[in-house]
Image (cartoon, rainbow, N blue to C red):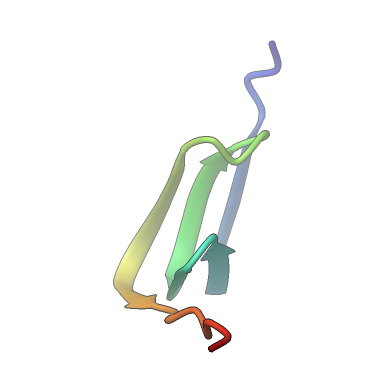
Length: 52
């Protein structure tokens, strides 16, 4: 398995299922199974629109 890491100090936005996460700076493994947002992480729940 690759040990490469993804890194940035820029603003990042992530969307996973019904979560929206943003912050500054990121360290993650290459398959994005482990992600760390370094500064000011904010998580918001995206409500699904269900049909009547």
